[in-house]
Image 1: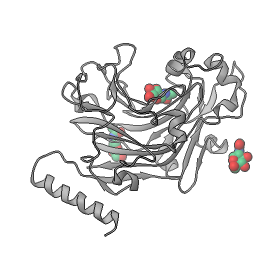
Image 2: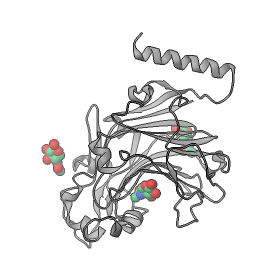
Image 3: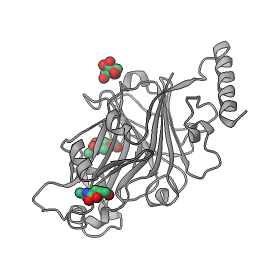
Image 4: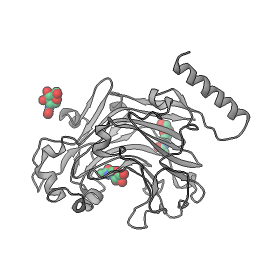
Amino acid sequence: MNVFARLLCSLVAVAHVSAGGSTSIGLYHLTEKVVGRDFYSHFNWEAIEDPTHGRVNYVDQSTSIQQNLTQATFHSFILRADDTTVLDPAGPGRNSVRILSKRNYTTHVAVFDVRHMPQGCGTWPAIWETQITDWPTGGEIDIVEGVNDQSPNAATLHTTEGCTMPENRAETGTAGQNDCNYLVDSNTGCTVSFPGGLNYGPNFNANGGGWYAIERTNEHISVWFWPRNAWYVPLEVRLGSPLLTTSAWGVPAAYFPNTMCNIAKFFGVHHIVINLTLCGDWAGGAYPESGCPSTCVDYVNNNPAGFSGAYFDFASIRVYEP
Ligand SMILES: *[C@@H]1O[C@H](CO)[C@@H](O)[C@H](O)[C@H]1NC(C)=O
Ligand SMILES: *[C@@H]1O[C@H](CO)[C@@H](O)[C@H](O)[C@H]1NC(C)=O
Ligand SMILES: CC(=O)N[C@H]1CO[C@H](CO)[C@@H](O)[C@@H]1O
């Protein structure tokens, strides 16, 4: 039996146990696989005003293709900021891309196989999920997010009032604020910093990236990260298996249980969003302490070459549903 067949057998065995016995060993099926050119049909390009006031100009799909801001091959999808243009300070910001999944999800697992993430002063990349309308009603789940190359990655929930996280919970990361209410401390959210040095920015990239995974159910929201060369990457994740359970994935980096937060109430029908903004509320606000030169907006305007590493390279996104 090859490794795949063995894996399927063990998953089927788990499914039988769960059907006969206790409730929550969820079995998920692959319902969406996004590789290379699939990104063009599975996502909408959002040429919108940056809601976080960044020094960016989000372009539409044809512009992004024409300017090489997105590029697809059989096994890769690149999404980048412009790295050739010196900007007119009075004109629009640096061209970049924000994409929104056409499909929507409630209970699901999503696995993001990322080879490279945007790096450089002023960058604020994010992979996240939200309801399209009425934010913060419907909630927001940030899976990958950071600014100005500052490690580590943080996973964060943002909600309306009434969703908080217990002090002690089963996660390997370090919790910051535990109130997810967007009105507390200027929308800090309930946030968890990931352990280890390979989950964000230049070190993530130098290591060949890795996998981020989210599981959302009505009982909990969990986020994991595995560096590219880690021995403990679950086989289903490494192989992109058509079936999986998260039961053997170990303690997540970030764990958000429903004990003090009615997840079904605070989180709506979500879409995946991938965006790359520059400066703005967070990256701009944190810029002076980042060790980066000049001011954020001046740096973005005048240093196109500083953005040559400001790109995502996705090997795949796989979404699984019950
Ligand atoms: C886009 O990339 C192609 C192939 O690498 C190149 O020939 C072309 O000049 C690039 N276009 C722009 C606008 O950079
Ligand atoms: C979610 O997607 C389904 C299937 O495409 C669609 O019928 C439904 O209207 C969507 N729901 C929301 C809230 O966007
Ligand atoms: C400009 C833009 O789309 N910004 C969004 C990028 O991602 C974060 C999530 O971490 C959102 O909060 C921003 O609104």
